[in-house]
Picture 1 (cartoon, rainbow, N blue to C red):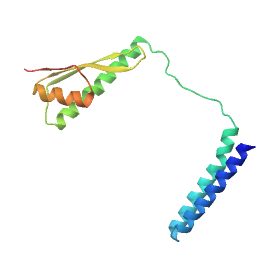
Picture 2: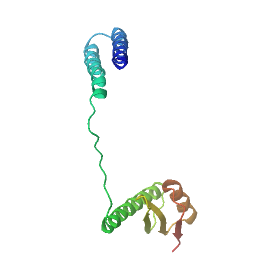
Picture 3: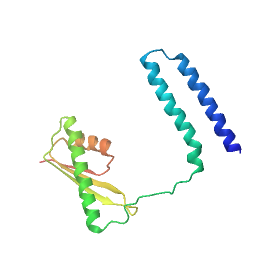
Picture 4: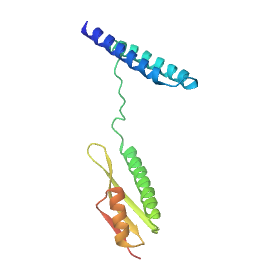
Length: 145
């Protein structure tokens, strides 16, 4: 019974608040739009106690355990994306290295992380600083030609 009382109290408060906002709104085309919006809001408020009363079954999706082939494909995809991001970060700073190699690994929880980045060509300190800031990678190797 108290749940019904709380729902009705909330609904009445919302009606009063929306009514006050509607009185403050300018007349014309905006008023029609606001009336439509407020009507949708009131319908949502009416439906919220029903949603609490009716329990829908819980559905969850899980990718499950991946095979070794799937994990290596995901690692390769993550490495390619990290390489693309590294090139974009460096290009934004005006640095264009010849080659970027990203090594990834998978944690026991299944998370893919960047273990190291190797870059060939360019200013060593600038590249190291930019990539450590952008990708949060501690191990950045820069090889001078």
